[in-house]
Image (cartoon, rainbow, N blue to C red; front, side, top):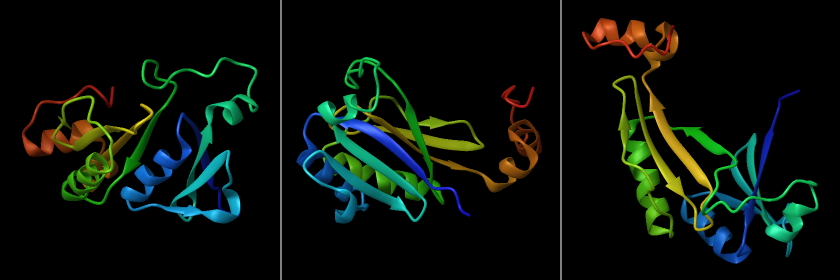
Length: 152
């Protein structure tokens, strides 16, 4: 059996969130969407369940944080290249997202953060395949760059 992941994130405006995520190129599965939730299909095994804050609260006894001011989770998604990272960011910015931090280029990994209109953070990143196989420090050493210490 294949494992699927469903990431639940709160929203103050469900219609705005659906428009934003569709702007990123994702689809909404209407069979698992209603006035309280939208099932955003990222790929065949990854879904975002965008829930109204009130509905989100029914799944936990803990206080639901305000994503504009508090980070509860950082959702990192891989991309096939640096160009795909940049193209995805362009779509997200055009759809109403914001870029809260500067681009990070560690030599072996390139990433950019995107906040959805509610402040939930998506990180789109590309990692050099050789760095995945060898580890970041070995890859950087092969490139003549200083080690990150990430492999220590």
